[in-house]
Length: 131
Image 1: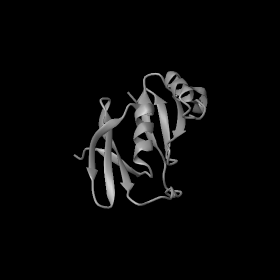
Image 2: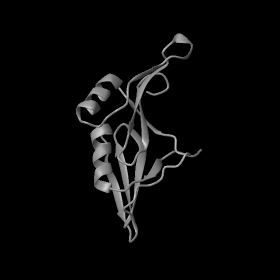
Image 3: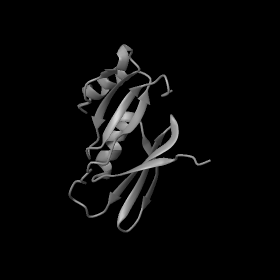
């Protein structure tokens, strides 16, 4: 079987993105590969073996067009309310908390936050299938 190992997003400013993911989700640089025209930065933490790969194309100074095909990346947290409050207090502008209750029963509690490049990130309360 195949093992899912990472997702990649293109970012404009390495420092800004590394800081955002560290502040929001405790991701740290696990590896950094520097090439002539681009740099790959792999972020991870002890919660998962999966990594987030940031690709920084050197010499680019205009934001990426995310188009209409990008969905989102998701993180699960122990306490979504506390995470939301922490990010809000840090000036990171998380969107409102949502109780997803199709049929009247809450099956998920979450919020979204945008990273510095506009990528949408879903933050879910741990439980159910997101342990």
